[in-house]
Image (cartoon, rainbow, N blue to C red):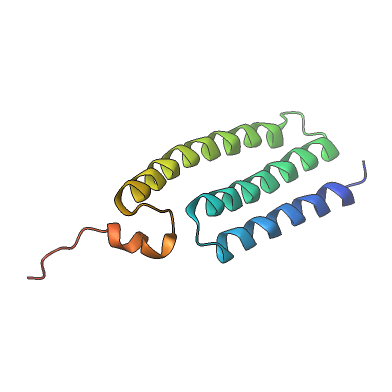
Length: 106
């Protein structure tokens, strides 16, 4: 199996995801960027598992864990996005620091 095409596709997905995380201020678009990075990692895990023929299929098992962690991450992050939207009326991340509780200085 030739590995160049899946590796190039995974690098494009990861690059697009990193750009989405760093350049966007909208929380939903940042979540999409994180998901792209996780999908790139899952693609590489499955690709190398298929290429090297591991008897335990470790790449596929780790991919199931990556998908599970991604689903949990989206659930928690969407709860934070809903809180941000309810408090401020938008999902711009520049104002997300206003959600922190202020503590009295001793």
